[in-house]
Length: 391
Image (cartoon, rainbow, N blue to C red; front, side, top):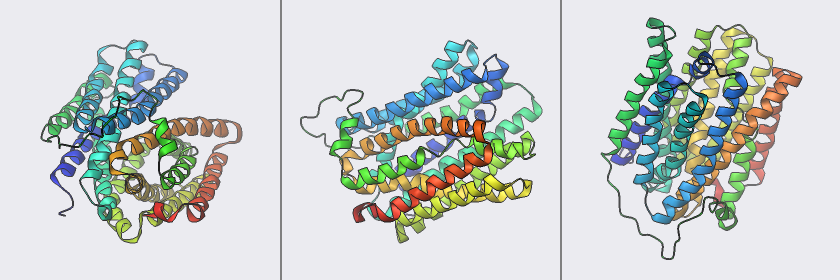
């Protein structure tokens, strides 16, 4: 695996430890917030605000990384903020402080995303992008397997000891930050005449970006606008009779499938084309959502979540590799940051829309509408995207 360089290994290990820290808390976050007095509405507002901040900051800091010709400072600061946010959640339980801590975590993600993905892109050639981004997603998602598993093990012996779990989550976060100092900043040539961008200056990139990038991003965002949170899949499983432990087990199973398939799928994608692999992933997504709309069999849920893990492996890393192949290398952080920013906003709207459809028409309607829109997006990619964007 000569194409997996030292830098790619380090960034992938950092993502693994960071995701382990975050996912240790993901299954218990709503329970903890309710435990300290947060209402369901307040929890929703908290997550919405945090994601919106992360979304907007991804574009700005991606642009700033390209403008300053620096990557590593943004990566280090971003991961450091996410690490220190974990114990902050346990120090005080006042709503304003919780908002601040959660926002710090998401802000850190916004700072690092574009610069980190640009570093990954800088480390490889166009023929290996699927492998590299697939390997990174595989390592990242393995953290999402280990984190909830460790949380379940801890809570089995220490039931409802949520506060100390936040302190424990600081340990892998700290390891991630320490690992980053094994990297050295590579010298990049700063473009002459570049001024420090304003917060929304990344939006101007859209007008000047390659046509292939805009066509690709329109399709990706159309899908994101209806691709709601995984929470709705878990809620459907819960409604069908799975108890809490099995629901969390299904979530771990999905992440394990994702982690195991992301790298080999990236290898195949480089051979057959990123567009074909991405469309294959969307096809699996349609099958999963159609299945969710009709299924109430507990055992069949594991089959659907298996397919959902393969879908994620065939789309998440592939979409970023695809973007990095069709934009100038000097604009990779801006391009990925801009897309990731809009994607965060779309994801927030998607979950709100899914919640409304679920409330008004029931769970099957939610999944059927999403599956139907995804079929339209599939045809868009089949007929609309340009040859340049099919790399």
